[in-house]
Amino acid sequence: MNAATSRDAYGTLIEPTTLKIQRLLPGPIERVWAHLTDSDMRRKWLAAGKMELKVGAPFEFVWRNDELTNPPGNKPAGFGEEHRMQSRITELDPPRKIAFTWSDSGDVLIELEAKGTEVLLTLIHRRLPNRNTMMMVGAGWHMHLDVLVARARGEEPPPFWDGWLKLKQDYDRRLPPQ
Image (cartoon, rainbow, N blue to C red; front, side, top):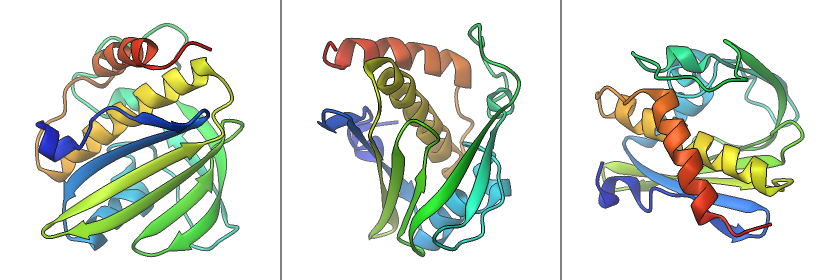
């Protein structure tokens, strides 16, 4: 993946507790929207979970990161086969914007913007409670979005866990000390 494809691949802190990360994806915008909102499509890059596309609607993310890539890579200790998180849609403007709660680790806003035949995805994760969470979330979003870009381009993504572990080290070096 080159810089033009990934924007600046690493997320950046745009406020002390807010991470912003961007990716360019092949369009059209409705296709990318489906990757965000359709459970079967989203489970291939992030997490499953049926969504009622309505502000205030609750939903559950169900992660099975071992199933995202083949091989999955070397899973670090402490991660189970499945992780679940309750969320709620807080903003919605199909097919351009969706925002939702992120358990006890803030809120997520994803905006899509058509750029010719591609779509710019901008993800902003606000109210990250501490540096360790920023490191985990930064590496997580980064790797999950890399999987999404690969899938959208019809490519096979690299092993999820190996990428996540490397990115966690990268974010540890990039984030300011607490």
